[in-house]
Length: 284
Image (tube, rainbow, N blue to C red; front, side, top):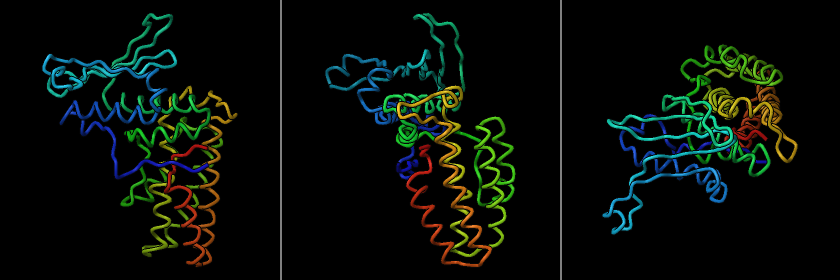
């Protein structure tokens, strides 16, 4: 099943853009969620409240968005613009139509949770883990996580990555990440600053591995670890499958670097690009 990765050319809603134009931000959020879920599914879980003045009605304008709500799995997530570019972001727990718990959240935290919940709904609607990944890609929200590996501090960030993931991954996946990190750390100094071969290894370290992990940790934790899709897959099993593919490819990169076989390294790099650059967000 082909992987899915966020498109850098079409950035989605973000905390950085929310204050500049709240209505444009909310419109982008709604449009992205509707595309991610597909209209029939979105109609059942996504609701938008607007204030339509007489002028709006006469001009055929949709009016000002006053609230966005996502209702699923006993939770209602709501977002409202407030004065001076502030936001009221909230998640309610509902039982029998009654709100039994209410939690206010910073906008960034709410957006990350919203992205994960949209992905969960999309995966349930289609019945497989890949749909969750496609939804995250389509929505375009890049969660503010601490899983980045930067080119400027590549080795330091790689070494700290397993620790930053402690308690957030299945045991098998945690072991796979540790092995991938070890292989990359052994490979990086062997390829040095070589333009082509070095770029292959750096992409694996700074893009393919972090993107795969961020796609998983964006999902609601309880749902990710307990849910079973109609096809029998789970977010956990899908993650370990994807990491297994990455581990095998990185192992071959390392072997190519040890034998100083630039051609083999580039061939393995093209495999990584084909599998992960189309999208390392696939958890299938």
